[in-house]
Amino acid sequence: MKFLDKAKVYVRSGDGGAGSVSFRREKFIEFGGPDGGDGGRGGDVFVEAVSGLNTLIDYRYQQHFRAKTGMHGMGRNRTGAKGADVTLKVPVGTQVLAEDGETLLFDFTEIGQIERIAAGGNGGFGNWQFKSSVNQAPRRANPGLPGEELTIWLQLKLIADAGLVGLPNAGKSTFLASVTAARPKIADYPFTTLHPNLGVATVDANEFVIADIPGLIEGAHEGVGIGDRFLGHVERTRVLLHLVSAVEEDVAHAYRTVRRELALYGAGLEEKPEIVALSQVDILTPEDCEAKMQALTQEVGHSPIPLSAVSRQGIPEALRRLKREIDRMAAPAAKDAQAEEDEARFGASLSEKDWRG
Image (cartoon, rainbow, N blue to C red; front, side, top):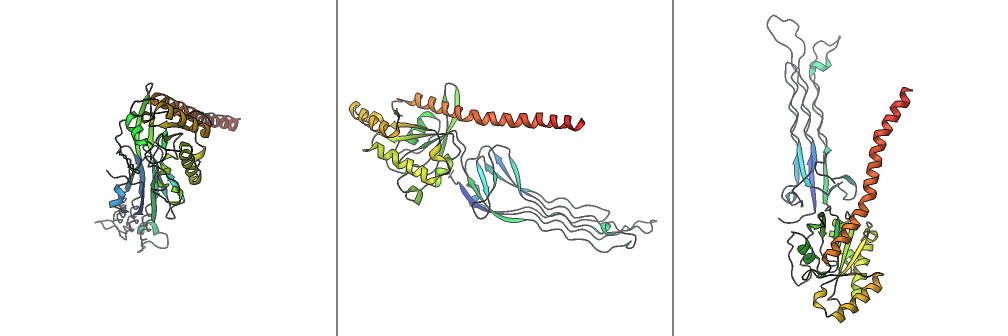
């Protein structure tokens, strides 16, 4: 399945059904009066986050979605049926943006979350609604109201606990393949990874999700190379694992290049907790490895993790440090959520007590 993380979609909710003009006609009943029913409401357009999806590829082949028109009203005070709804199913992590591509309408962060983005038009009144003491036989009914139409952008930002960043060929995909069941394409040329990959890593019986994005190069924020398009997929992560390849002649410069691109991209990526690792150390002699470790330590300010996905050197330590940072960053969020829940529960009880005196 191809990866698509942004799609432009046109949606239109259903028009309301027209009201009916009808009069009661039954044998032996005089002055039956108006009995035209109201029109049915038009169908709504919803967006729902579902499991089992990790791309917006479905919206490359279909970009127009229209809900059904409500049924018209009928005699005997029969109201028309509501038009059928349309639901756009998207992966968790999808954002719905307005046509300008910047205004955020909805952010889908949980499975099962569903939002209405276009409401169907109301059905028109049938002629029974216009009956009065001075108009016993109204011969008018309302048409249904038109539905809403709008163009939206669907933008996917993968939800992961940890994100992998680094220059091309820094060993990110190899690391992901070695610690998860993900099978990204791996080769010895730059930009082998063309789209983000997700994998679930396990350490000490605990699981967390890792996102691997295409490599960054100098000038990525200006569109050089693949550009910074995929950095949005690590915006939601709690911690970054920055891999610096031991193949680089100047590991300090390689580190600075990626850090500069993260800062220029913005969105708080440069402020996220970062774990630095010198990857592919299995290809170095002990003397060269020590020299590059010292150079990177001087640049970073602390000792990086020597890492090799082939010999698995440093893999357990990297995973444990990632999990430790994830838990540390998750603790305040859980505390805030519990505080909001307590306030909602006990605050409501207190207000009710004060109201009763």
